[in-house]
Image (cartoon, rainbow, N blue to C red; front, side, top):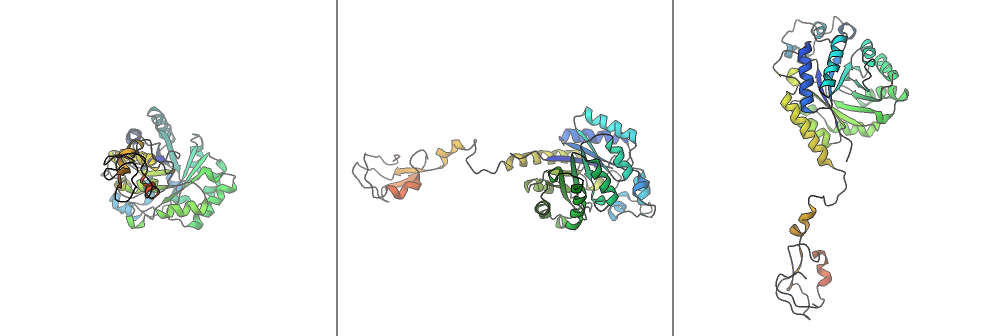
Length: 335
């Protein structure tokens, strides 16, 4: 069976800047049995200029069109002390901590935690100084989201990592759409296979659709990493809550993905252990269609095919037609 799918429960900024909410998100992700719970690490002034406007979905979900993007994001920033507290809480609940850095200083901040995995967000895939810095950090594993990107964008970003000596097998490229929520028409899951073919790396999917069916489908198509936003309550104020799963939905998604993993199997077509016992019950054998005496010729009139399947295979039917019966057979007897 293939390697286990890595499931990243994306808490993001759905803590609303409140450490107690962040801890509850960790607990919910642990209960759902996700592999990682992921936050966002940034210094707002390093990421967003005073002139940056909100995205349409951010205006709609925060209900404050007069607030700048910088003003909105500053309220969602996690301090270094909060990071340490959240890492400790993850350890307590047996789930891995992960965060995405959005600026150069935050990359340095996360390096100090030795997380072993670095997540490159979609918005930084065309940020050369950012990519050069994270490539130089030489993490054991990189996961790169590709929302808003074309193949050329991906090739350029990937090249920076490869030129630093990072192996393709240690880079997972996530197909992604950054609209919150993503319309089904724009999901384009087949692009994940295009990425795999073009770059010969592991692939996955970062999902912003409503519901859980699309990430489940992505796993069936070969995704090795799934990332999905979740929240404690979709009605909470904040930019990402409405397009996030609630805890019960996250639990259902993780369970479904684990079932799909099992269902995918090893690709070898052969009777499974559970169905071998059904072969003699469901298959058929050569039988006497009516009483046959020793010396009679087997014909289409006296040779039939019926269950059970523990006799001569019906695939031998024509080999027996025209041959001589060597013993007596009662009707329905196995030949």
